Image 1 (tube, helix red, strand yellow):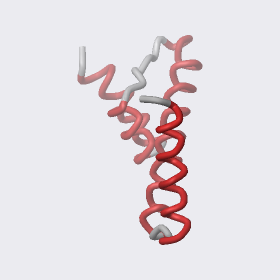
Image 2: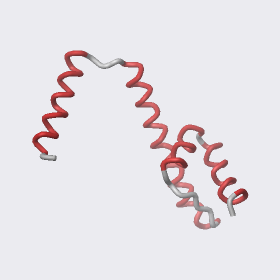
Image 3: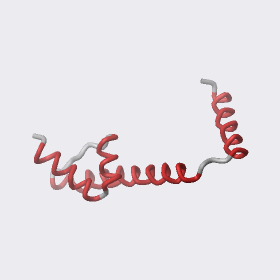
Length: 88
């Protein structure tokens, strides 16, 4: 797709949202979910970084990021338990 068309679509959507307005509650909820998913991916990255000395590795993908992001530290602990005690 041509970059000019893509930029004009984004500008047009921005103008529509500016004039019509966006519902705040769904946008706020989506923003919170995105932030939680980013924090979950960061927790998995730190687990993999510091867990190499203990031979702990949990792959970072969409499912593990959602579990660790939405459940927090207990979710990361559950992923480690599932990875090493339930899966061979």
